[in-house]
Image: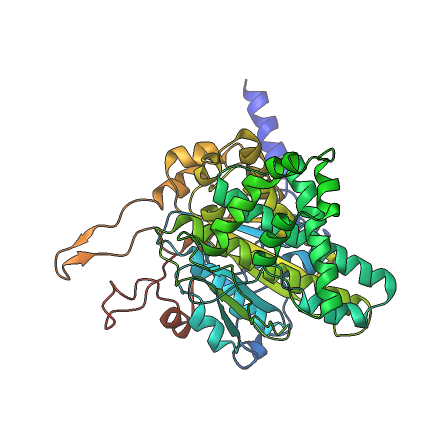
Length: 507
């Protein structure tokens, strides 16, 4: 036993206390006792500063865990590092997502619309034009005006002609033959989808295939007559054409030479059109000629706030009209740019309150998909605000629900705020959330407490807190920080909030 102890003592004396000085460090330091090697190296936190503030820190020597590419959105909740993110920059410059689109999901009042407005302002500085599709509350009007944009109002006080093709005709005369036919075909398909959507809203059921064939031919006849006579057809002209029953429409209806059979096929569609152009529900909103002119070089806000929230059908119809008008204009602009006739422009589209139109009737999801589909190579990004994943589950049929959930699947970026436990479990089917992320999302949904001193509720605990998810990678928890001027412009509680208080982020 004594010999064993002596051998151990001698062996310990032979081992040096520190590595020899001539030892060459590896990538993680000097291995061995006293060498200070590090098995794991964390990325350094990164912060943003102006050229005046940060110029003395150059050269920069380390990277960051959270990407710092895009519009400054806020601070990392754990490291307090600056977080920059937006769907266009993450797609175009960082190659972090495969699709320049995003979905913002949270309970009302936690800052969804504020995130969208921060992106709109930041991307405008990058040369991207923000377009606000369907501003239901008028909350984006002031932001759009501050950016130098145009305001287009849809509602009872403003007639909307969904068959207006003047911009398309003007562009077609400038385009080469192939591009001209493509623009005309796209315009025809978009107008047909828009009319089908209106009829779906009016009748609470989709059109059947024979009605679609008759409508297709009827729109082609109206477009031909309009170019020949130099006028723009309206829905009243479409209703009158169905009543006129020309040979082209009877052939499309396959009436077998029987006018009575033709009337049976088209009667319901004609009656629905009559209700749209002169009925109390729509109040003549779609009966006249419109003077909508969109400047492709400016931001645009399609304002539908004049429609009352209780006017469900009219609100849905106006939202669909904004999609049809806006995306039709974008299609023409991109076609002219592809032909080298105009400069290439990039756009960022904010689609709010989409669920109001989708759940009106079966088939609305298909119309939304056809009206809003844009090629990612066109330099167009978009964001869709959603109050609840259950908005998609409340759609009329399983087909509509599955297709609507596909909007979430295809989004390149998910920005998740406070949601309920049941919502988290439902969302888990679409995006992988680890236990800490699920716990954070539900904690942010905690209701606000009552402030006795101010005699009002405090701000909700989850206001401005979001989790940025991209694919199956861990999310980035952030505290959204918006500049004070933006918060003053974006106050969706103007009628409830004391204007002497601090501005708040609302959704």
